[in-house]
Image (cartoon, rainbow, N blue to C red; front, side):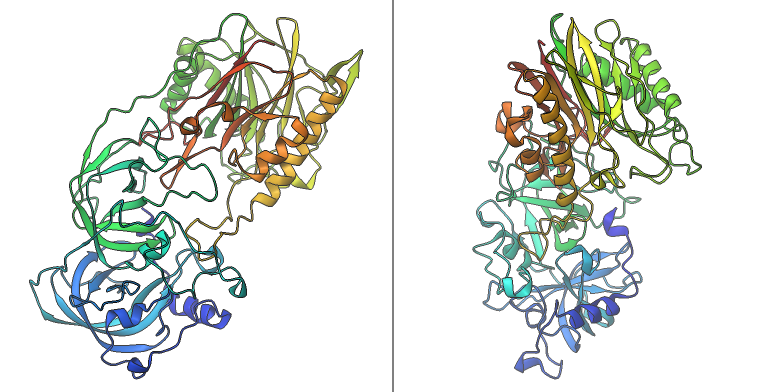
Length: 611
């Protein structure tokens, strides 16, 4: 799990670098200049950064409220006699590096160094966790009652997410005085290290492989009919979301398996931590019970004989070394849940030996194993087209050479082959008598464009359905890697990855405009893992000039998602239509993202229309 990743022994170095950069600057309070007699709320202070950062303190007392024996080892202490300031936390993490020897209920006195640990490092933009490092611990007594938990509930968490960052501090909120009654992030920060509790809460992020899940304490907040919390804008981050982990080692007590819409019933109680994989996290001493609400995987409608069904599906680094069970499950989904679309654009098809980095670029064996599995599941004998990338030039796992692939049902649709396409040859647009065509098919769009450096190049294909030409462009835009989290100390967070996707969207938009310039009513579908939201600048660039319409916007707001990240149901996968496609049915088929058991982390998308 994320919390099991050991903290570096270089915590002090991180703090020193932060102090040098002015990112974690603090000043000692007059009452604590000698570091003696310091209370926990003196250390926590009224901002995100301790006023005593970097200082040695002695005799810090508290009751142990939680012990972590794995990963980032240490324990939490809390002052049972709090001050009257709601901005100052009364809890604190003591980082021991080795397995702690204290127990919950111990009254302790701790000497140590006040540090600000930045999970993920300074470059991540994450907020820091105030802690005591290199501690000397004295147990004063045992068996004391744990301080009563603070209940986190729908009425206690503010509706506004975060204050605007200070322009003079580069947009950081680190130096701003906490306003826990005004902003959700300030509220959670004011409880950092504190013993907290939630009551029965709906699960909005399924149990993941790292034994954690997400709940919401605001059941009405952008809720959808399947139980999730929909992320619909950069200004509405869903303040009620909270990550939950367990302090009990998995070997002693398996973490419960939960899907979106299930309920974590009863009380869940423990210290409030902060980590790089989700921010504020309830690390539970006492974990509620998961109540299964019976979420089912969706099945889309079968296309009518005069309708063309086009789907996009990110199959998550599929290669022949994956177990047959994965191929069979993905194939079953294509046949049963997607109703055997006429065209399926696949993303993340790896080469024939997966991530083995030996120069192999062909994916013929990968695709054959998949199409064979589809036939075995009762589906059509799909034919396929793709363009092999250059070795290690398209991002993804080194040696994996992921690419997009078209599957098509030759009994329903034909592919127009125009030879000459390879990894470096760009397809273009030509036309005759008002009808557009590709110069090479399948072909890649502008592969030399710097926008596609270390990224998947769009795959364009020309199909014919019932005598009508349909152009499909399969995409896998650059990932969000490098973006700051929504819990960043920069508010708004820096989303550096958007720059590349903006250029990619502009390139695809320009290509679509070339097609429409030749044939105004051409049927063009831009599909794939766009790695960005329907309200993003990327999507706006794709739709520039009315060249495309994001079909996901035809759905009710509560249905607009294909991925669940940190408890937010959000759009990453899209199908966009040209103006010539006047009427269509669109479906985001929810079969993966909301479930603890996943065949992929993405939900496929399907669009049906009559060319």
